[in-house]
Image (tube, rainbow, N blue to C red; front, side, top):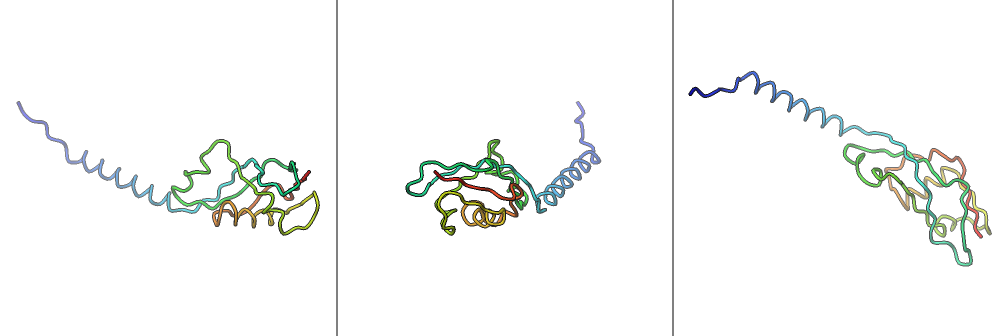
Length: 134
């Protein structure tokens, strides 16, 4: 019985396809991507004497700088994305009684330091967010 030989052009084509796929993967996952996600706001750590908090917008839209495989990783792969905001830490610089308003720039600064770090690029929506404490 004669043995079948593998044809050399078939192996060469397969090797070229594998090399091309690896090169495509390296180029694709080395790019920087800007991605936007909507997060549900979850408040915790209320100041002493306050029983509840109401937020003018319960969803916040955030844009992140992602690179490669980080784009596919947590916390971005969860279907129900949440951002946890410590109300006591957020309102500390403002000396008001029960209504606190923050611009998207102020929220970005807070989230950079307390939640997401340098990956956060911007807070897209809402332009202004208000916390009502009771």
